[in-house]
Amino acid sequence: MKKLAFMLALVFLMLATPIYAEGIAVYLNGEELVFDVPPQNINGRVMVPFRAIGEALGAECYWVEEDNTVIMKKQDGMVGLIIGHNKMYLSDGETVTGNIELDVAPQIINSRTLVPVRAVSEGFDCTVTWDGDTKSVSITTSGYIPPAPIPEPEDTAPEEKLPENTAPENKAPEGSAVTNITDFAKALQKNLESRNTEFTIVASGLSAELLERVNSTALPNAVYLFEYKYNSYDGYVEVHYNIEYLMADGVISAFKSKDTSGLNSQQLEVYNKANSIIQSIIDEKMGDYERELEIHDYLALNVEYDFENYLLGDVPDESHTPYGALIKNVAVCDGFAESFRILATMAGLECETILGFAGEPHAWNRVKIDGEYYLLDVTFDTPVPSKPGLVLYAYFNLTDSQMGIDHEPDIVDDIKCTATEYNYYIYNDLLFSSQDEFDHKFTEKYLEGEKYITLKSDGFNLEEIDPNYIFLLTGKDEVMYYVMPDHGVITIEIQ
Image (cartoon, rainbow, N blue to C red):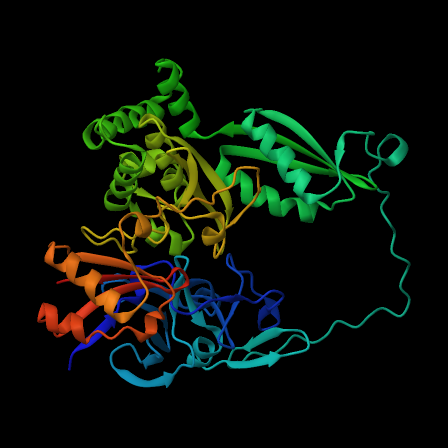
């Protein structure tokens, strides 16, 4: 039977759209579990990172890349789940003993493998309950006996209240404190842009917990090393910073000044490699768009996303840097984005790294092409796992609103990205709004010998695409394709 096979594990954005389960807590034997990615409600089921829940249940966790499978193993058995498949398989370690039908299949979203918490827990003979009032999932392992409650003493002395840390006059100095979270983020960004290494920001009427969201998001992607501490007083908070800046800044500064004497050994290696890349892929006759495309494709084809360490929660520092991307050929988002910034600058393009949130803290780029600004995300255009010759273009030269579908910048500045001329699909005439247009554009690219044909819907429902013409034209019985539904992009592989 001819079929169109959906390669679920090879892209960051999958068919199911996550709803972040804000406020949902997961308890194991009365103890709340802490996840690096919050639980998500997908089609009415609570999904959690597979390794975190597996290890909490005492299982050894494995990712089998060639089979797109996660395995959790305990002494009394194991469970296996396949990405995109609605069954969980039970095994005694030697043979499959049964399976459980899943309402929601395990899936990779924004490079995280998520599994249904109830199914996995019950697979290890646990009892799972849901409390709608408290929005919490409670997991109780087989044989668990709750500890006896500790009786309260008959006479309890009043709790001694520690004196609050106070400053002169118990208020922030006049005129020096920010009073809202947006101004705090802007003050932090201003100091970072000025490359200040030691500074203090005073925030009035804001808690350290609220300020921490900005710090924990912005700093890891913006600087190489950092330390900061909070001093809380009555009505205001002082945040003291010690910063060491990104590797890319030194490389770019050396390129502009033609002075490499201040670079450390890794920066010098990146500087030389970046120069070599530019000389090999950039021709002086190229326009801005062609230069940008060459750099985008070079990174997507030559740098592998550090997915294995990401799943383990143990991404090495190098993967966050251009050294990891350009020298080791392995990186995560900030390594991709900062490498693009270096190469784009060396190619004569105006470029910066944007910090924000895309399911978790993330980094992407803004670039100026022929006088207009565009957004692109090389990380999300790099398939996971990588496949020779495959580059995705769903995030190549988007507007603010297009990128805003799944990206949220930490700081919204005055530069607006509204141009569409150099969007990959518009510039290359790859939009379709009907089945006939889809067939026509597919035929053009097929006859040109394209191995991967990528098209973007202009109002046509991707689910209504009829694949029969593809089979007729190619003579294939099965065609693989990769889809990013939120952006209307489909990429078809011609084997």
